[in-house]
Image 1 (spheres, rainbow, N blue to C red):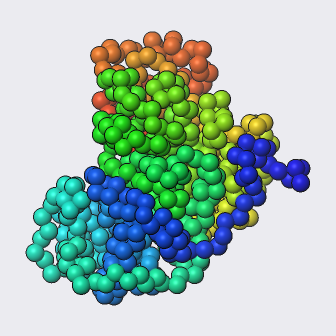
Image 2: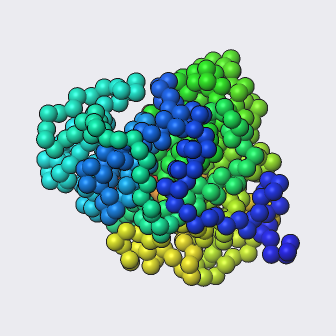
Image 3: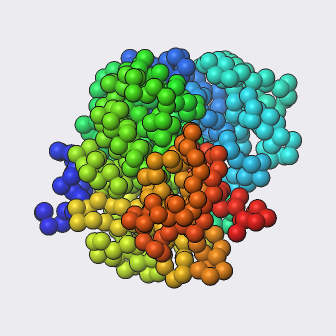
Length: 552
């Protein structure tokens, strides 16, 4: 039996079976179970407005009945244009209870992207907050004919920003929507294979494409996280977990919202990241666990007076979405006494991919961890994805698990390109070490081909981040007449730090990078572009640079 165990199996927590297989179930069944099992516990806390699991069940039942009264049901798609707010989990679960499908729209989407997602998904109704940019943009979408029905919710009801709701027959307010709706729970008997979510991700043509996630794939992702985190402290009764990760993003949705609810945790919701508010709530609400993207931890680590704050309630901290600078990991460990746990996942995998076990969080901090139970991961040749590479060799990561999407919506060509022999090709480049830990080298599309060498921006960024004056850094490839492409670094300095020239930077990097990896350009900036979830975006930076008159 031991012979067929993967190398990483020995690092799982006691009692965890590496061959774990999630139950083929639905999100609706999970909802019925956790809202009943933890009825008296606090489920959601937003601006000190708290819903118990029982109250959450009642409000979702009321909302589902209200949506049914509007004709929403199986075959329909409801677009959620919502940041973090209590309205998101209410509409997410209520929509699924009716048998309809959810699709998410991002607050940073341009009008063209919103129109594309609405048309591509076939969304019948849009749900948004009333304050800008949401409310005004919804009216704009109605005026363009992208859709004909909208629900606008005033977040001031839960202590959020207020926004006027227009007197428009195409727009329904939250009070008007739920008026007269009963609170009896009626659950659509979905099949595991029924579509639950159309989650958009970047497209090769420039327009986003939708990963189709069924009830079974979403429920599997939740079970994988739940099983992998059997002994996590935030599963104890009364434990509270704070999140700033947006629920419209797959990581915030499955690994936080859905999994934390499934395990009976209280989720303290922040609509946007504010370092002071996060630290205040950690102290005031005795937060046990929290996580986010590296930019969040960088901001907390650099907060004036952070050394005097009480972070002693924390028992588990994590980061994902991008590599964490080692210097920041060290500082956060000094502040909390905790090792930062990282991981990796994608929209197409329901977020479930890898995680760093607590036992190796410091020793293997440069890795993205080991595959979660029930997840198979291999490294294959970039040019021949059917050829599996041995330990230590770098290639493309491919993944297989019950949480992987079924296909791309209305995109058979992209689906065919993305699956080989039942494995999903991630587009991420990495390698395994002898212990079974996976190291993410870079995105295949971010690879810099410089003078015949493969140059990985992440390696350069990690080296530059060790410079004492550097707060943030991003590296991209730019056209180079001699090399084809060369690496250029964009740096945000720490407060009070003086600029330095490229020659000085190269001296600093001399024993950290190979000659072929040395940046050929250096520019200072006051900020770096980020995605809606706070991740650095090389694509956005590349677009900005190459569109500039002297971009290259």
